[in-house]
Every structure is written in structure tokens, then in C-alpha cells.
Image 1 (cartoon, rainbow, N blue to C red):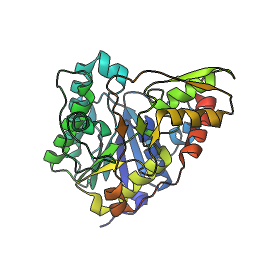
Image 2: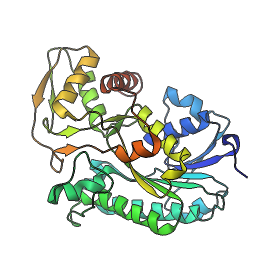
Image 3: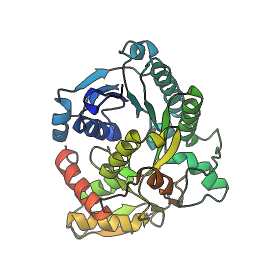
Image 4: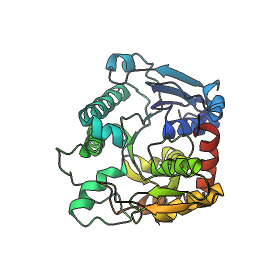
Length: 329
């Protein structure tokens, strides 16, 4: 019997985080029942009140390194999302061993638990666009980058490789598990609740704290990226979930319509603030690739999802959210 959305259940590891919390909201709007497992509870942001208090959501504090804690959860889910991960440049540089060990062990635990769910229709794993880093560094990576590009491992002794390696191994675990998988490779997703570890909130914080006449510092000013607002990313994820043709596929998650330099990005961040600020160009960040942008042709062929949020509109929304919820708190 085919279930309608009113009776479908989803489990989200890392569901209190950036992408996970937005996907949880989208699922609830589509009448799914949502069970969130995470090491931490929902943050005290006002826009999370409706999610935190929704009648169809359950939050459970779980140590994802402990399989016994995960396996004690009822195994009656239609879809399982694995978003939880140890990430961020600071963690990668300070604790590469923990990044590698934690991300691999938690992925293994979630996969083993997923195999216990007899009616599971999809296992969605959040990988990363950083899996392309080795190919870009040592070979001629196609940009915008299609999912078919071969993956090359950079130096295994470099701390910068730990996160990419953990996600590459996670992808392999998914393939070999025989679960009905979809692997996502996110490219520079931004928006509300993204924390402060990414370039757009970091630039916006500099803008927020600056006084008119000041200059903000921009690292790697000539490096380019293609950014995707969380609303568009969530729309893509929901379309992927609903499309049977996305089973057993690896798909970029992002926006191909515009690639922009860090300098031009900083100019937009200043413009949305309404402040009169200059820009001071600084050196290239170590390990930062010159370009990063996804090819979205495969996703568009499968789900037909085109981005709706312009970069200017998305950054304005993000600046407003961070100003009210994060900066100065």
C-alpha cells in the first residue's frame, strides 16, 4: 500500500542544524511526521518556535557515536536523512583525527540502523562539494563541476583532507550498504541559521560591526564561488525525495546561475546593509580553491528545479535574520 504524506515518517540526524532544520520545516509543511536526533537541542531562535513546538515533531538527544542509543529508536521510517557531521575549518585544523573518526563512525551507525527499517524508501546522505578538491588541485577539474568527475584524494597526511576523506568514505559506505540512497554534494548553501563558519555570514558580521567610513577585510578576493540560498536548496531536496528517479543517484546541491568573486560578494553584503564601507583586499586563504561551482544539469534533468532566490535578495534576507538573531547576541 502506498502511503500518503499524512502517514509518512522521516528521521533526521543533525536535524537541529542548518540544512536539517530547514528540511524538517519543509517535511512538516508537507504533513510528514519528523523525528530529529542530534547531540544538541534546537537553538533559541524565534523562527524555530513553530518547529520546536510542532505537534508532529519529536526531538531526541542522541550520541550518534553510540549505536545502542540509535538502535533503540523505533525502526518504522520511510526516509532517513543523515546531515549530522563534525565540520568547519577550525575543527578540521585542530582535530582532524576526531573529524575523520566521528564522521565515519556516525555514518556507519546510521546506515546500520537504517537497514533495520523494513519500509525505508530512501536514505539521503549529505556529502560535500569538497570531495572534488583533490581533482581540482592535481588535475583539470571541469567547472561548473558535474557529478561524473573522478574524485582524487589529496595528501592523506594533510589535516585539510580529513573532512573530505570522511565524506568520500561515507559515500562509499552508502553505495555498498545496498540501501535506496541519494547522495547530496552541497555547494555553498547559505541563509538563516547557518552559523558563523561560512563566508557570507562572516562577511555580513564584518559589515554589521563596521562603522560608516570603515573598510572590511576580504580574503581571497579574486576567488569565485556559486552560492545557493537555503530556500532553493530545500526545494531541491524535497523534489529529490519525491522523485523515484533520484534513487541511487549522486547529485550536486546548489545553484549554477551565477559565479561571483569574494570581492563582488563583499560589495553586495555592504549594499544590503546601506552602509558606506570600503573593502581591503587580503591574501589568499591557504587551501582555498580558485573556483568552485556546480553543474546542475543532472539535477535539473531529474527534478526540473530552478533556483528562485537571487543572490541580492538572499543576502538581504540573511543579513536581516543575522542582525535580529545572531550578531550582537
